[in-house]
Length: 248
Image (spheres, one colour):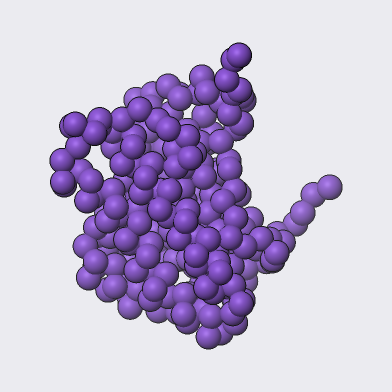
């Protein structure tokens, strides 16, 4: 059985953070393909303009907004610049690796500022408007590292585990007003940020034996924003290709 999402998001405005490359860019392109007007967020104006042009060349609608999400006032300014939205994709984030002993304050703060505080502020500023209008969808990008311990990735995983808990809190807080909030916990994925074999190095733990392509993760994120996912709320969808069992 196939599902046709064509035009299912017409009339909706979507903000996708970190949309100039990788999973975020794939999400922006796919949302636009379903009729949404997409606000492409990033820090690089050139890459942002390129993504917007790609969407417009395919017949979609897009505009670019720059912001440094590690700065709280910049996040608030982004929310103000974007205006009312129907879909919020909290995709932007950072992942770096260090042991506990090697982790300094700046390393710790960067992960929680980008991976947890920025989504929190965007939900705080944008989702009440969705609730007032009686509809909306938020999807937060998490990682299988939020629930599976990974060496030297404790701070990264902890920041995403916090985002998964907030996903469930927000689903409870805004669900009665018609706003659905979900998360996608992605496995190793080929993106510009994982160039150099970072994603492929993790595939030994994956039953499918390979890393995902950005478009594969994006398809699940986009599905959660469509009417076909109308009863999915407060879920953390695992999209990691399956985890291998521990040998006895």
